[in-house]
Amino acid sequence: MATLPEGERLAVRKTLSFVVVVASIILFIMPVGAITNGQRDYGRHPNVGALIAEWRIPGVKEELCSGTLISPTVFLTAAHCTAYLESLGIPHDHVWVSFDEDVDPVTASTHLIQGTWVTNPKYNQRQSDPQDLAVVIFPKPVTGITPANLPTLGFFDKMAAKNGLKNRNFTAVGYGDQTRQVGGGPPRLPFDGERWLAVSTFNALNLAWLRLSQNNATGNGGTCYGDSGGPNFLGAGSTETNTIAGVTITGDTACVATNVDYRLDTTTARAFLGLYVTLP
Image 1: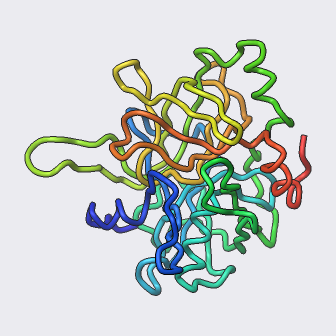
Image 2 (image 1 turned 180 degrees about the vertical axis):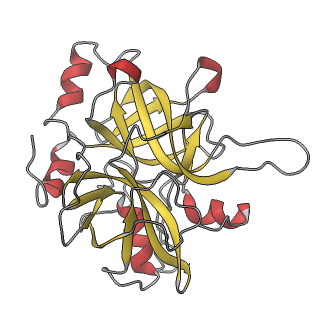
Image 3 (image 1 turned 90 degrees about the vertical axis):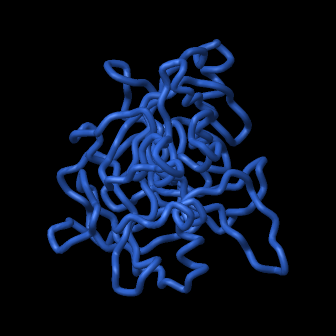
């Protein structure tokens, strides 16, 4: 996609808190961006793709969010991404997914799979549990890509009870901006439209949230503008699994402290996901 002016990208791609409706106009949580202090994916996560729509300029396809193939016909992303499309009046079937390594810009050579998006009908603005999940349904199975796994019910509660989350690493994957650059003018968020990954360390577990440290001073990376809907896999490096712990939803403004992810092992998350895939 074409790189947007930073002010517009910040407005469209990331919301750092859940906001209240003003004058009966819903202000959706906007997509989080790319990977910070990470590295190019180089084919390590072929089941992670970019959600693409004509959301800014009619007739021009651009990357909006990230997501993951969780069955041959189901792509998981964030509800605030599809809710934003709905707010623009974009039809449900006017969306595409690309599993290409690089989707900037979207050209005739970009491999696009058209699908139909479904926003979780229980998506809300509550910080306690926003149920911020959505799916894109493909008319035909995607072949040649192994879908990611979902965790079992209460998986992370059980790990926490055994102190199994302390110092645990997670791998975030997504498309979008990289680490903020300062100097020679206003701060900049470089964007190349490629799939990147970064490793984060466990910070806290809440009823609906998995919070990960992305503090570079402690060797962590994380997410920034462009990664909303993207996965955070359990483990990293040789210990990385194909299980998605949580979906990237939000974080801090400067993309330097915390990656906040919606858990996929909760009853509410599974109630929505179970409508589209077989749950473990």
